[in-house]
Image (cartoon, rainbow, N blue to C red; front, side, top):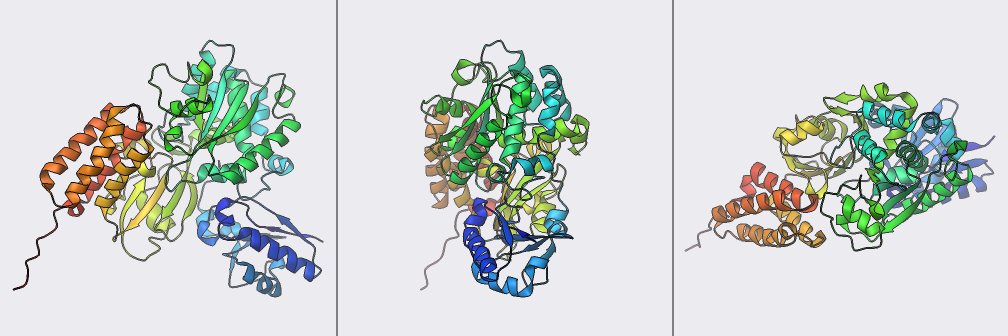
Length: 518
């Protein structure tokens, strides 16, 4: 009888030798005359345990990690194919605390199934949402998404259903669904994990969006730095097309929707929706002035839905389980679950999906285990390189769009980067301005010139030159960028700069004078 062993094909696992571990398991099984079926699944998101190897037993899957190729013979000797005890054994995968306490809706299949097995996808509730959507009128689908309370997971938090309704109601012979998979924020990897570990959920979500709005064509816009995600998505699209999930008649409905992957050149600003649309059209990736909104005049001048990967990947479970089921998770106006990515100087880095409402302190200290270095936490940056720095005194902040906004922060793509007490926050503020200067598309003056002047002002503060005057100048410059920039790149750069200066004033103080010894 064949034993099934799971070895992730996720980029995070590949980076630490997953391919070599898989090859070692195959060789060892052959040498011992054992029948082993290797499945290359996605990652479970427990990145500190990669390569995480799982074995299917009669009691459930048993996890071993982090496994190196040199560990493989010892695992076979110990009887890991039967789920036996070993120094690397963590028991049943579902009982690992980091996984057990999650609420996995969007990531329910990621790390569980073979990413390119449509049979696996169907076995775990895949396509049930699309099958329901096919039997509904477009307006009914839109209402279901509105009633779910789903808000854009890309950062802005705009109600997804309202955007869909705008496109559905807009006149036009041709409409588009564009998936923004240009995941460029520091500490974020959820989009990549879904595309590599459960690509059919994104395809299903985009097909439902097409049925709801009357769009017949979709594009997944991602970055060239994601070769494994691109390869997996393209393979999954071909499989879906052959199975009648995509094409001229979605699931035999007579309604058309097809899609393809487009690859950008790695410009951060192309994560902004209008820059992304310009890039998709073959133009230079620069920001468009709004109005008109992309929902009315987007790709090629047609009504266009632009949603993040996580937004679209949340749609199948909403259509499958119903709006009320999804809406019951969360707090306030933040409904459903949010895939939070823990990165930086943290002991247990990885992806943690939970309902809105968990606090920063719980995420960093209880779930993440504190810093990897063992030193005290000094700051966490939430929302990528344009997110605010929060000190430990704000660790009671609830993960909720409005709660973060009330404290001059933003959730963004829900990436959290942790810094210990050795971090210099003045240098972090400088990095924010430098990052903006490098990545600016150059269209608007506040972003293009303001960021360059910002680097110079921070440098003067660091050199102790007229510190108070330059701090006042930096504050004024941030105000100009925040309210004068055309897009969020220049508009959000003040968040990390001002939060660093506000919460860590000691790092912006002039260096004490050292008297020369007589």
